Image (cartoon, rainbow over all chains, first blue to last red; front, side):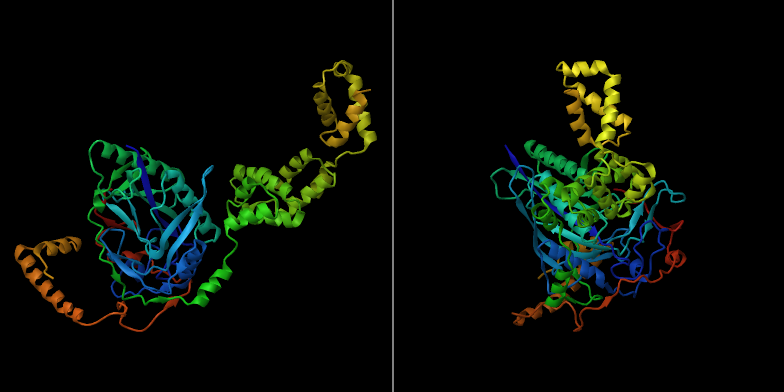
Length: 480
Length: 95
Protein backbone atom coordinates (compact mmCIF):
# COMPACT_ATOMS: atom_id res chain seq x y z
CA UNK A 1 0.00 0.00 0.00
CA UNK A 2 1.10 3.56 -0.65
CA UNK A 3 1.01 6.00 2.23
CA UNK A 4 0.46 9.72 2.45
CA UNK A 5 2.26 11.53 5.28
CA UNK A 6 0.38 14.34 7.02
CA UNK A 7 2.44 16.88 8.95
CA UNK A 8 1.66 19.88 11.10
CA UNK A 9 4.28 22.01 12.82
CA UNK A 10 4.25 23.80 16.14
CA UNK A 11 7.01 26.37 16.24
CA UNK A 12 8.19 28.18 19.34
CA UNK A 13 9.65 31.58 18.59
CA UNK A 14 11.60 33.21 21.40
CA UNK A 15 11.06 36.96 21.25
CA UNK A 16 13.85 39.53 21.28
CA UNK A 17 12.51 41.60 24.14
CA UNK A 18 14.85 42.97 26.81
CA UNK A 19 12.69 41.61 29.61
CA UNK A 20 10.51 38.60 30.35
CA UNK A 21 6.86 38.40 29.39
CA UNK A 22 5.40 38.94 32.87
CA UNK A 23 8.22 40.55 34.89
CA UNK A 24 11.11 42.96 34.48
CA UNK A 25 13.91 40.38 34.72
CA UNK A 26 16.42 40.47 31.87
CA UNK A 27 16.24 37.84 29.11
CA UNK A 28 19.98 37.97 28.43
CA UNK A 29 21.37 34.57 27.39
CA UNK A 30 24.23 32.86 29.19
CA UNK A 31 24.14 34.58 32.59
CA UNK A 32 24.88 32.91 35.92
CA UNK A 33 22.10 30.37 36.64
CA UNK A 34 19.13 31.86 38.51
CA UNK A 35 20.64 35.36 38.52
CA UNK A 36 17.81 36.73 36.38
CA UNK A 37 14.88 35.76 38.55
CA UNK A 38 12.30 37.43 40.79
CA UNK A 39 9.19 36.38 42.73
CA UNK A 40 7.11 36.37 39.51
CA UNK A 41 9.29 34.06 37.43
CA UNK A 42 10.24 31.95 40.45
CA UNK A 43 6.54 31.35 40.98
CA UNK A 44 6.58 32.55 44.58
CA UNK A 45 3.18 32.81 46.26
CA UNK A 46 1.44 36.16 45.88
CA UNK A 47 3.56 37.43 43.01
CA UNK A 48 1.51 38.94 40.19
CA UNK A 49 2.41 38.79 36.49
CA UNK A 50 2.08 41.96 34.37
CA UNK A 51 2.11 41.66 30.59
CA UNK A 52 5.05 43.12 28.64
CA UNK A 53 3.48 45.40 26.00
CA UNK A 54 6.26 44.72 23.51
CA UNK A 55 5.33 41.03 23.42
CA UNK A 56 1.85 42.02 22.26
CA UNK A 57 3.30 44.31 19.61
CA UNK A 58 5.59 41.54 18.38
CA UNK A 59 2.71 39.07 18.30
CA UNK A 60 0.57 41.46 16.23
CA UNK A 61 3.43 41.93 13.76
CA UNK A 62 3.98 38.19 13.48
CA UNK A 63 0.27 37.73 12.88
CA UNK A 64 0.00 40.41 10.22
CA UNK A 65 3.05 39.05 8.40
CA UNK A 66 1.53 35.58 8.26
CA UNK A 67 -1.90 36.72 7.05
CA UNK A 68 -3.61 36.08 10.39
CA UNK A 69 -6.52 38.03 11.77
CA UNK A 70 -5.86 39.69 15.10
CA UNK A 71 -8.30 38.64 17.82
CA UNK A 72 -10.00 41.76 19.23
CA UNK A 73 -10.21 40.31 22.73
CA UNK A 74 -7.86 37.57 23.84
CA UNK A 75 -7.16 36.06 27.23
CA UNK A 76 -4.40 34.13 28.96
CA UNK A 77 -4.90 30.66 30.33
CA UNK A 78 -3.11 28.40 32.76
CA UNK A 79 -1.81 25.15 31.33
CA UNK A 80 -1.40 22.85 34.30
CA UNK A 81 1.29 20.22 34.57
CA UNK A 82 4.14 19.29 36.84
CA UNK A 83 7.73 19.41 35.74
CA UNK A 84 10.81 20.62 37.64
CA UNK A 85 11.51 23.41 35.13
CA UNK A 86 8.04 24.89 35.68
CA UNK A 87 8.02 26.62 39.06
CA UNK A 88 4.34 27.56 39.30
CA UNK A 89 2.99 24.13 38.37
CA UNK A 90 1.35 25.77 35.37
CA UNK A 91 2.48 27.62 32.30
CA UNK A 92 0.79 30.89 31.37
CA UNK A 93 -0.28 30.48 27.77
CA UNK A 94 -3.31 31.21 25.62
CA UNK A 95 -5.91 28.59 24.87
CA UNK A 96 -9.39 29.49 23.71
CA UNK A 97 -8.77 33.00 22.46
CA UNK A 98 -5.24 33.29 21.05
CA UNK A 99 -4.04 36.65 19.77
CA UNK A 100 -3.72 35.62 16.09
CA UNK A 101 -5.82 33.16 14.09
CA UNK A 102 -6.51 31.85 10.59
CA UNK A 103 -3.33 32.83 8.75
CA UNK A 104 -1.29 31.22 5.99
CA UNK A 105 2.04 31.14 4.22
CA UNK A 106 2.65 30.16 0.62
CA UNK A 107 5.49 27.75 -0.03
CA UNK A 108 7.18 27.00 -3.31
CA UNK A 109 9.22 23.85 -3.91
CA UNK A 110 11.51 23.57 -6.92
CA UNK A 111 9.65 22.36 -9.96
CA UNK A 112 6.29 22.27 -8.20
CA UNK A 113 3.29 24.52 -8.02
CA UNK A 114 3.03 26.91 -5.08
CA UNK A 115 1.03 25.69 -2.10
CA UNK A 116 -0.77 27.50 0.68
CA UNK A 117 -0.13 26.25 4.22
CA UNK A 118 -2.70 27.27 6.81
CA UNK A 119 -1.71 28.73 10.17
CA UNK A 120 -4.27 27.78 12.78
CA UNK A 121 -3.13 30.18 15.44
CA UNK A 122 -0.31 32.13 17.03
CA UNK A 123 -0.38 32.55 20.77
CA UNK A 124 1.77 34.15 23.42
CA UNK A 125 3.18 32.17 26.32
CA UNK A 126 6.02 31.97 28.79
CA UNK A 127 8.96 29.62 28.43
CA UNK A 128 9.94 27.15 31.15
CA UNK A 129 13.33 27.07 32.89
CA UNK A 130 16.28 24.95 31.85
CA UNK A 131 17.29 21.60 33.28
CA UNK A 132 20.91 20.51 33.33
CA UNK A 133 21.95 16.92 33.81
CA UNK A 134 25.10 15.08 34.68
CA UNK A 135 28.57 16.49 34.65
CA UNK A 136 28.04 19.49 36.91
CA UNK A 137 30.16 19.65 40.01
CA UNK A 138 28.22 18.88 43.12
CA UNK A 139 25.05 17.96 41.28
CA UNK A 140 25.87 14.28 41.52
CA UNK A 141 22.91 12.28 40.43
CA UNK A 142 20.51 15.19 40.60
CA UNK A 143 19.37 17.56 37.89
CA UNK A 144 19.98 21.30 38.14
CA UNK A 145 17.27 23.87 37.51
CA UNK A 146 18.08 27.29 36.07
CA UNK A 147 15.08 29.61 35.98
CA UNK A 148 16.72 32.43 34.02
CA UNK A 149 14.78 31.30 30.97
CA UNK A 150 11.53 30.83 32.88
CA UNK A 151 8.99 33.45 31.80
CA UNK A 152 10.89 34.36 28.63
CA UNK A 153 8.34 35.41 25.99
CA UNK A 154 7.47 32.93 23.25
CA UNK A 155 5.12 32.90 20.33
CA UNK A 156 3.81 29.48 19.42
CA UNK A 157 2.91 29.27 15.76
CA UNK A 158 0.67 26.30 14.99
CA UNK A 159 0.20 25.22 11.39
CA UNK A 160 -2.71 23.30 9.95
CA UNK A 161 -1.91 19.68 9.06
CA UNK A 162 -1.44 20.84 5.47
CA UNK A 163 2.13 19.66 4.94
CA UNK A 164 2.59 16.44 2.97
CA UNK A 165 6.35 15.85 2.94
CA UNK A 166 9.48 16.64 4.91
CA UNK A 167 10.51 19.05 2.13
CA UNK A 168 7.26 20.98 2.45
CA UNK A 169 7.73 21.12 6.21
CA UNK A 170 11.27 22.49 5.89
CA UNK A 171 10.19 25.01 3.26
CA UNK A 172 7.39 26.31 5.50
CA UNK A 173 9.70 26.39 8.48
CA UNK A 174 12.40 28.32 6.62
CA UNK A 175 9.90 30.88 5.47
CA UNK A 176 8.56 31.39 8.97
CA UNK A 177 12.13 31.64 10.25
CA UNK A 178 12.95 34.26 7.63
CA UNK A 179 9.90 36.36 8.52
CA UNK A 180 10.46 36.43 12.29
CA UNK A 181 14.16 37.20 11.94
CA UNK A 182 13.49 39.78 9.20
CA UNK A 183 11.04 41.57 11.50
CA UNK A 184 13.57 41.47 14.34
CA UNK A 185 11.16 39.49 16.53
CA UNK A 186 13.59 36.61 17.07
CA UNK A 187 17.31 36.00 16.62
CA UNK A 188 16.46 32.73 14.87
CA UNK A 189 19.21 30.76 16.60
CA UNK A 190 17.96 27.18 16.42
CA UNK A 191 20.88 25.63 18.30
CA UNK A 192 20.34 27.90 21.29
CA UNK A 193 16.63 27.15 21.09
CA UNK A 194 15.42 30.60 20.07
CA UNK A 195 13.45 29.01 17.23
CA UNK A 196 12.34 25.45 17.90
CA UNK A 197 10.02 23.10 16.21
CA UNK A 198 7.77 20.21 17.22
CA UNK A 199 6.40 18.14 14.38
CA UNK A 200 3.09 16.27 14.41
CA UNK A 201 3.41 13.38 11.99
CA UNK A 202 0.92 10.78 10.85
CA UNK A 203 0.42 8.62 7.78
CA UNK A 204 -2.71 7.45 5.96
CA UNK A 205 -3.32 5.34 2.86
CA UNK A 206 -3.09 7.41 -0.31
CA UNK A 207 -6.60 8.50 -1.29
CA UNK A 208 -7.92 8.34 2.26
CA UNK A 209 -9.41 11.42 3.84
CA UNK A 210 -9.09 10.24 7.42
CA UNK A 211 -5.85 11.16 9.11
CA UNK A 212 -3.92 8.45 10.93
CA UNK A 213 -2.95 8.66 14.59
CA UNK A 214 -0.18 11.19 15.03
CA UNK A 215 3.00 11.26 17.02
CA UNK A 216 4.48 14.53 18.22
CA UNK A 217 8.22 14.80 17.75
CA UNK A 218 10.09 17.17 20.02
CA UNK A 219 13.59 18.56 20.15
CA UNK A 220 14.36 19.14 16.52
CA UNK A 221 16.78 22.04 16.50
CA UNK A 222 17.96 22.45 12.91
CA UNK A 223 16.36 22.42 9.48
CA UNK A 224 18.36 19.31 8.66
CA UNK A 225 17.10 17.50 11.75
CA UNK A 226 13.50 18.48 11.00
CA UNK A 227 13.83 16.75 7.64
CA UNK A 228 15.56 13.72 9.16
CA UNK A 229 13.16 13.38 12.08
CA UNK A 230 10.05 13.60 9.91
CA UNK A 231 11.41 11.13 7.37
CA UNK A 232 12.38 8.67 10.07
CA UNK A 233 9.01 8.99 11.75
CA UNK A 234 7.06 8.52 8.50
CA UNK A 235 8.98 5.33 7.76
CA UNK A 236 8.63 4.08 11.35
CA UNK A 237 4.87 4.48 11.21
CA UNK A 238 4.57 2.85 7.78
CA UNK A 239 6.69 -0.13 8.91
CA UNK A 240 4.60 -0.43 12.06
CA UNK A 241 1.32 -0.48 10.12
CA UNK A 242 2.69 -2.88 7.48
CA UNK A 243 3.71 -5.24 10.27
CA UNK A 244 0.16 -5.23 11.56
CA UNK A 245 0.75 -2.80 14.42
CA UNK A 246 -0.97 0.47 15.23
CA UNK A 247 0.50 3.91 15.80
CA UNK A 248 -0.14 5.24 19.29
CA UNK A 249 -0.58 8.91 20.03
CA UNK A 250 2.50 9.91 21.99
CA UNK A 251 5.34 12.35 22.34
CA UNK A 252 8.59 11.21 20.80
CA UNK A 253 12.04 12.64 21.16
CA UNK A 254 14.37 13.04 18.19
CA UNK A 255 17.91 11.87 18.81
CA UNK A 256 20.24 13.69 16.39
CA UNK A 257 23.04 11.16 17.01
CA UNK A 258 21.10 8.15 15.80
CA UNK A 259 18.69 10.04 13.52
CA UNK A 260 15.82 8.17 15.21
CA UNK A 261 12.84 9.13 17.33
CA UNK A 262 11.98 7.39 20.58
CA UNK A 263 9.03 7.44 22.92
CA UNK A 264 9.09 9.88 25.86
CA UNK A 265 7.26 7.94 28.52
CA UNK A 266 7.41 10.83 30.97
CA UNK A 267 4.94 12.85 28.92
CA UNK A 268 2.40 10.07 28.57
CA UNK A 269 -0.24 11.34 30.91
CA UNK A 270 0.61 14.97 30.51
CA UNK A 271 -1.98 15.77 27.85
CA UNK A 272 -4.73 16.61 30.32
CA UNK A 273 -3.72 20.20 30.96
CA UNK A 274 -6.97 21.47 32.54
CA UNK A 275 -6.66 24.90 30.94
CA UNK A 276 -8.60 27.69 32.57
CA UNK A 277 -8.47 31.50 32.27
CA UNK A 278 -5.68 32.98 34.37
CA UNK A 279 -7.36 35.31 36.87
CA UNK A 280 -4.07 37.15 37.44
CA UNK A 281 -4.03 38.58 33.91
CA UNK A 282 -6.82 40.78 32.62
CA UNK A 283 -8.19 40.36 29.10
CA UNK A 284 -6.18 41.84 26.25
CA UNK A 285 -8.23 44.07 23.98
CA UNK A 286 -6.67 45.15 20.69
CA UNK A 287 -8.54 47.86 18.82
CA UNK A 288 -8.44 48.33 15.06
CA UNK A 289 -6.28 51.45 15.41
CA UNK A 290 -3.61 49.42 17.18
CA UNK A 291 -3.65 46.80 14.44
CA UNK A 292 -3.47 49.42 11.71
CA UNK A 293 -0.63 51.25 13.45
CA UNK A 294 1.30 47.98 13.61
CA UNK A 295 0.59 47.35 9.96
CA UNK A 296 2.10 50.71 8.98
CA UNK A 297 5.15 49.96 11.11
CA UNK A 298 5.84 46.69 9.30
CA UNK A 299 8.84 46.77 6.98
CA UNK A 300 8.66 45.36 3.50
CA UNK A 301 8.53 41.59 3.94
CA UNK A 302 11.12 39.29 2.37
CA UNK A 303 8.78 38.01 -0.30
CA UNK A 304 7.82 41.50 -1.44
CA UNK A 305 11.45 42.56 -1.32
CA UNK A 306 12.47 39.58 -3.46
CA UNK A 307 9.82 40.38 -6.06
CA UNK A 308 10.84 44.03 -6.17
CA UNK A 309 14.50 43.13 -6.69
CA UNK A 310 13.44 41.16 -9.75
CA UNK A 311 10.89 43.58 -11.20
CA UNK A 312 12.54 46.91 -10.40
CA UNK A 313 16.24 46.10 -10.23
CA UNK A 314 16.29 43.43 -12.89
CA UNK A 315 17.93 40.74 -10.76
CA UNK A 316 17.46 37.06 -11.50
CA UNK A 317 15.13 35.09 -9.20
CA UNK A 318 18.15 33.31 -7.82
CA UNK A 319 20.10 36.48 -7.03
CA UNK A 320 17.03 38.08 -5.47
CA UNK A 321 16.53 35.04 -3.29
CA UNK A 322 20.15 35.01 -2.11
CA UNK A 323 20.14 38.75 -1.37
CA UNK A 324 16.96 38.57 0.67
CA UNK A 325 18.20 35.69 2.83
CA UNK A 326 18.20 38.13 5.73
CA UNK A 327 17.31 41.75 6.18
CA UNK A 328 20.77 43.22 6.89
CA UNK A 329 22.05 41.62 3.69
CA UNK A 330 19.16 43.04 1.65
CA UNK A 331 19.71 46.44 3.23
CA UNK A 332 23.42 46.29 2.47
CA UNK A 333 22.67 45.51 -1.14
CA UNK A 334 20.09 48.29 -1.44
CA UNK A 335 22.45 50.83 0.09
CA UNK A 336 25.05 49.76 -2.47
CA UNK A 337 22.57 50.18 -5.31
CA UNK A 338 21.59 53.62 -3.99
CA UNK A 339 25.26 54.63 -3.97
CA UNK A 340 26.27 53.10 -7.27
CA UNK A 341 23.29 52.43 -9.48
CA UNK A 342 24.34 49.24 -11.25
CA UNK A 343 22.27 46.65 -9.37
CA UNK A 344 23.80 43.68 -11.16
CA UNK A 345 27.38 44.74 -10.33
CA UNK A 346 26.48 45.45 -6.69
CA UNK A 347 24.67 42.10 -6.52
CA UNK A 348 27.66 40.22 -7.91
CA UNK A 349 30.08 41.80 -5.49
CA UNK A 350 27.72 41.42 -2.52
CA UNK A 351 27.16 37.73 -3.25
CA UNK A 352 30.79 37.20 -4.26
CA UNK A 353 33.64 39.01 -2.51
CA UNK A 354 31.57 40.41 0.37
CA UNK A 355 29.86 37.14 1.27
CA UNK A 356 33.07 35.14 0.87
CA UNK A 357 35.02 37.51 3.11
CA UNK A 358 32.24 37.57 5.71
CA UNK A 359 32.17 33.77 5.77
CA UNK A 360 35.94 33.39 5.88
CA UNK A 361 36.27 35.76 8.81
CA UNK A 362 33.06 34.81 10.57
CA UNK A 363 31.92 38.44 10.46
CA UNK A 364 28.27 39.44 10.30
CA UNK A 365 27.10 41.73 7.52
CA UNK A 366 26.33 44.44 10.08
CA UNK A 367 30.04 44.61 10.94
CA UNK A 368 31.25 44.43 7.35
CA UNK A 369 34.38 46.66 7.15
CA UNK A 370 33.65 47.43 3.51
CA UNK A 371 30.53 49.56 3.66
CA UNK A 372 28.07 49.75 0.75
CA UNK A 373 29.37 53.27 0.08
CA UNK A 374 32.98 52.06 -0.14
CA UNK A 375 31.91 49.18 -2.36
CA UNK A 376 30.18 51.68 -4.63
CA UNK A 377 33.38 53.75 -4.81
CA UNK A 378 35.31 50.67 -5.79
CA UNK A 379 32.82 49.82 -8.54
CA UNK A 380 33.05 53.39 -9.79
CA UNK A 381 36.80 53.02 -10.16
CA UNK A 382 36.18 49.98 -12.36
CA UNK A 383 33.50 51.80 -14.37
CA UNK A 384 35.82 54.71 -15.00
CA UNK A 385 38.59 52.40 -16.16
CA UNK A 386 40.87 53.50 -13.32
CA UNK A 387 41.39 49.88 -12.29
CA UNK A 388 40.60 46.55 -13.90
CA UNK A 389 38.14 44.07 -12.42
CA UNK A 390 41.08 41.88 -11.46
CA UNK A 391 42.96 44.63 -9.64
CA UNK A 392 39.67 45.55 -7.98
CA UNK A 393 39.83 42.24 -6.11
CA UNK A 394 43.27 43.13 -4.78
CA UNK A 395 41.98 46.56 -3.78
CA UNK A 396 38.97 44.93 -2.13
CA UNK A 397 41.17 42.66 -0.01
CA UNK A 398 43.12 45.70 1.16
CA UNK A 399 39.87 47.57 1.89
CA UNK A 400 38.75 44.62 3.96
CA UNK A 401 42.02 44.58 5.91
CA UNK A 402 42.48 48.31 6.43
CA UNK A 403 39.04 49.84 5.99
CA UNK A 404 40.65 52.41 3.71
CA UNK A 405 38.86 54.03 0.78
CA UNK A 406 39.58 52.31 -2.56
CA UNK A 407 40.81 55.51 -4.20
CA UNK A 408 43.44 55.90 -1.50
CA UNK A 409 44.60 52.30 -1.83
CA UNK A 410 44.90 52.64 -5.60
CA UNK A 411 46.99 55.78 -5.21
CA UNK A 412 49.17 54.47 -2.40
CA UNK A 413 49.96 51.22 -4.16
CA UNK A 414 50.12 52.67 -7.67
CA UNK A 415 47.43 50.35 -8.99
CA UNK A 416 45.98 52.69 -11.57
CA UNK A 417 45.16 50.77 -14.70
CA UNK A 418 47.33 51.42 -17.70
CA UNK A 419 45.12 52.14 -20.68
CA UNK A 420 47.69 54.14 -22.59
CA UNK A 421 48.19 52.33 -25.88
CA UNK A 422 51.83 53.41 -26.25
CA UNK A 423 52.88 51.99 -22.88
CA UNK A 424 51.12 48.70 -23.48
CA UNK A 425 52.44 48.49 -27.01
CA UNK A 426 56.02 48.71 -25.84
CA UNK A 427 55.42 45.93 -23.31
CA UNK A 428 53.93 43.79 -26.09
CA UNK A 429 56.89 44.47 -28.35
CA UNK A 430 59.30 43.37 -25.62
CA UNK A 431 57.40 40.18 -24.98
CA UNK A 432 57.06 39.29 -28.63
CA UNK A 433 60.78 39.81 -29.11
CA UNK A 434 61.60 37.57 -26.17
CA UNK A 435 59.18 34.84 -27.27
CA UNK A 436 59.68 34.58 -30.98
CA UNK A 437 58.87 30.85 -30.90
CA UNK A 438 55.38 31.42 -29.51
CA UNK A 439 54.80 34.20 -32.01
CA UNK A 440 55.53 31.72 -34.80
CA UNK A 441 53.21 29.13 -33.28
CA UNK A 442 50.40 31.66 -33.11
CA UNK A 443 50.93 32.78 -36.65
CA UNK A 444 51.05 29.13 -37.65
CA UNK A 445 47.45 28.78 -36.47
CA UNK A 446 47.86 27.77 -32.83
CA UNK A 447 45.52 30.42 -31.46
CA UNK A 448 45.61 29.09 -27.94
CA UNK A 449 48.97 30.77 -27.47
CA UNK A 450 47.11 34.07 -27.35
CA UNK A 451 46.35 33.47 -23.69
CA UNK A 452 50.04 33.07 -22.98
CA UNK A 453 50.73 36.54 -24.36
CA UNK A 454 47.89 38.10 -22.37
CA UNK A 455 49.30 36.50 -19.25
CA UNK A 456 52.77 37.79 -19.98
CA UNK A 457 51.55 41.35 -20.53
CA UNK A 458 49.59 41.23 -17.28
CA UNK A 459 52.61 39.87 -15.47
CA UNK A 460 54.95 42.54 -16.71
CA UNK A 461 52.39 45.29 -16.06
CA UNK A 462 51.71 43.80 -12.61
CA UNK A 463 48.09 43.35 -13.56
CA UNK A 464 47.60 46.99 -14.28
CA UNK A 465 47.26 46.87 -18.06
CA UNK A 466 43.72 47.46 -19.26
CA UNK A 467 42.63 44.01 -20.50
CA UNK A 468 40.49 45.38 -23.31
CA UNK A 469 43.34 47.46 -24.66
CA UNK A 470 45.75 44.55 -24.25
CA UNK A 471 43.49 42.24 -26.23
CA UNK A 472 43.01 44.71 -29.01
CA UNK A 473 46.68 45.60 -29.38
CA UNK A 474 47.89 42.01 -29.06
CA UNK A 475 45.55 40.84 -31.79
CA UNK A 476 46.72 43.57 -34.08
CA UNK A 477 50.42 42.95 -33.42
CA UNK A 478 50.32 39.16 -33.52
CA UNK A 479 48.42 39.14 -36.76
CA UNK A 480 51.38 41.21 -37.92
CA UNK B 1 -23.35 14.41 36.28
CA UNK B 2 -21.93 11.71 38.43
CA UNK B 3 -18.35 11.74 39.67
CA UNK B 4 -16.90 8.27 40.02
CA UNK B 5 -13.98 7.00 42.04
CA UNK B 6 -12.12 6.63 38.72
CA UNK B 7 -12.57 10.36 38.06
CA UNK B 8 -11.17 11.14 41.49
CA UNK B 9 -8.21 8.86 40.86
CA UNK B 10 -7.54 10.60 37.55
CA UNK B 11 -7.49 14.13 38.95
CA UNK B 12 -5.59 12.96 42.00
CA UNK B 13 -2.91 11.53 39.78
CA UNK B 14 -2.71 14.77 37.80
CA UNK B 15 -2.38 16.68 41.09
CA UNK B 16 0.17 14.17 42.42
CA UNK B 17 -2.06 13.32 45.37
CA UNK B 18 -2.17 9.91 47.03
CA UNK B 19 -5.62 9.14 48.37
CA UNK B 20 -6.90 6.23 50.40
CA UNK B 21 -9.94 4.24 49.32
CA UNK B 22 -12.17 5.97 51.87
CA UNK B 23 -10.99 9.37 50.75
CA UNK B 24 -11.68 8.60 47.13
CA UNK B 25 -15.25 7.67 47.94
CA UNK B 26 -15.68 10.68 50.19
CA UNK B 27 -14.30 13.12 47.63
CA UNK B 28 -16.27 11.60 44.79
CA UNK B 29 -19.44 12.36 46.71
CA UNK B 30 -18.33 15.86 47.62
CA UNK B 31 -17.19 16.74 44.12
CA UNK B 32 -20.41 15.39 42.74
CA UNK B 33 -22.38 17.63 45.11
CA UNK B 34 -20.32 20.70 44.15
CA UNK B 35 -20.70 20.11 40.43
CA UNK B 36 -24.37 19.35 40.90
CA UNK B 37 -24.79 22.71 42.56
CA UNK B 38 -23.08 24.49 39.67
CA UNK B 39 -25.28 22.52 37.28
CA UNK B 40 -28.14 24.70 38.44
CA UNK B 41 -26.78 27.38 36.11
CA UNK B 42 -28.02 25.32 33.21
CA UNK B 43 -31.52 26.24 34.19
CA UNK B 44 -30.81 29.80 33.04
CA UNK B 45 -30.93 30.94 29.44
CA UNK B 46 -27.35 32.00 28.65
CA UNK B 47 -27.74 32.43 24.90
CA UNK B 48 -25.55 35.30 23.77
CA UNK B 49 -23.75 35.56 27.08
CA UNK B 50 -19.97 35.36 26.74
CA UNK B 51 -18.36 32.88 29.15
CA UNK B 52 -17.01 34.88 32.07
CA UNK B 53 -13.23 34.72 32.18
CA UNK B 54 -12.75 37.52 34.68
CA UNK B 55 -14.91 38.93 37.43
CA UNK B 56 -13.73 42.53 37.17
CA UNK B 57 -14.25 44.86 34.18
CA UNK B 58 -10.59 45.72 33.65
CA UNK B 59 -8.55 45.17 30.53
CA UNK B 60 -5.08 45.87 29.12
CA UNK B 61 -2.73 46.13 32.07
CA UNK B 62 0.76 46.45 30.61
CA UNK B 63 4.31 47.09 31.61
CA UNK B 64 6.94 48.55 29.31
CA UNK B 65 9.88 46.40 28.22
CA UNK B 66 12.32 47.86 30.77
CA UNK B 67 14.72 45.75 32.82
CA UNK B 68 14.22 45.85 36.61
CA UNK B 69 16.82 44.49 39.00
CA UNK B 70 16.39 40.79 39.76
CA UNK B 71 16.55 39.65 43.37
CA UNK B 72 19.93 37.93 43.09
CA UNK B 73 20.87 34.27 43.33
CA UNK B 74 21.15 34.20 47.12
CA UNK B 75 17.58 35.30 47.63
CA UNK B 76 16.34 33.24 44.71
CA UNK B 77 17.80 30.08 46.20
CA UNK B 78 17.08 30.93 49.83
CA UNK B 79 14.05 28.66 50.14
CA UNK B 80 15.44 25.83 48.03
CA UNK B 81 15.42 22.52 49.92
CA UNK B 82 18.50 21.54 47.93
CA UNK B 83 20.88 23.53 45.77
CA UNK B 84 24.13 23.07 43.93
CA UNK B 85 26.19 26.09 42.98
CA UNK B 86 23.54 28.52 41.90
CA UNK B 87 21.23 25.78 40.61
CA UNK B 88 18.17 24.41 42.31
CA UNK B 89 18.89 20.72 42.74
CA UNK B 90 16.08 18.28 42.05
CA UNK B 91 15.81 14.51 41.77
CA UNK B 92 17.13 13.43 38.41
CA UNK B 93 14.77 13.92 35.51
CA UNK B 94 15.26 11.24 32.86
CA UNK B 95 14.20 11.61 29.26
